[in-house]
Amino acid sequence: MRVTDLLWLWILLGVLVVVGGGAALLVPRSRRRGGAAPQAPAPAVEEPPAEAPPVAVPADDATVAAPPAPVVETPAPAAGRLVRLRDRLARSGSPLGARLLSVLSRDHLTEDDWDELEETLLLADIGAGPAGELMESLRTRVRVLGVRDADSVRQLLREELLKIVDPTLDREVATHGPLADDGTRLPAVVLVVGVNGTGKTTTVGKLARVLVAEDRSVVLGAADTFRAAAADQLQTWGARVGVETVRSDRDGADPASVAFDAVKKGRVDGTDVVLVDTAGRLQNKAGLMDELGKITRVVTREAPLSEVLLVLDATTGQNGLNQARVFGEVAGVTGIVLTKLDGTAKGGIVVAVQRELGVPVKLVGLGEGPDDLAPFDAEQFVDGLLG
Image 1 (cartoon, rainbow, N blue to C red):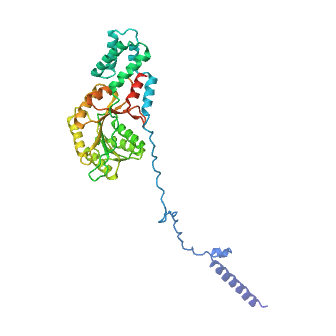
Image 2 (tube, rainbow, N blue to C red):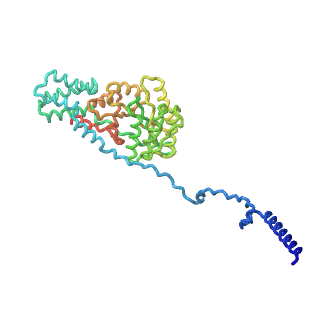
């Protein structure tokens, strides 16, 4: 080969090398390393938001469970309740009966002994008039009969006490209303009155239990609109035995209007008895006593009053007689309810209040229990006093 040809061959090889190296520079680094060419990022795809858990919707015919009905109590029968008082008095040892028997069983009764007996009766709130009558009768019988043994003395004392308590009085609470002009039976309307603190609203609730125990239908009228808790308290008593309470939606409403509505509802529903609770009143407050007279007038437009029961605290003594006197003039009291008679020292108030008003004690409160209200029985009461 000629030198010239060889020279051109080397020149051609050099050009190829230069051209090849430049082309390599134009290739992306990634491809030069043998990797795949980068791809354009894919557009972001939004994920759907998480759905809230489905809410259960009851079908149209689904039954929604009602709250449980309140438990209605069955009151204890009223018959025989006073036996509990008699037994309680006998176990505790009545101060009245014990003192009388201890004096009367002495061998020789002096004037001082008779004075002690009369003082004992006066301390028991029996009243001066009844105490004098009892002492005179006892002195005569002891002198004539010449009795000294305890059993005979006790029998004489029982007879004399029973005589002044007077078992002949009608002590039944009127729970049968009169007939209306159209021949329908009107409800018996029982108005309950008294001063503050005697347990009046509680007595109304307990009386409702007595009537329910005797299978009488009852409506309660919460006419004590001055004490905020009175209507609630009465409604609670009624609900426990399934008795409805008529009340006002606001405090300070007209008591006569509430009482009227209760009697009207009782008449429309054919209820046996309507018990109307009134505000506790002080007998020396003329305005409150006038309002009580208004309640009486308004209620009688719908149905006549069958009973006006005066609630007295047996421990108030002679002050209870002043209350009884004023209430008797304003409201025409027909019966007495003595509360807190489970205390034994003041049992003579039974005699005193009957003499003062000329109306009987019809019910007595024996304690704090819901069924501790009993029809008064003269014989059982005297037996309890004497132990």
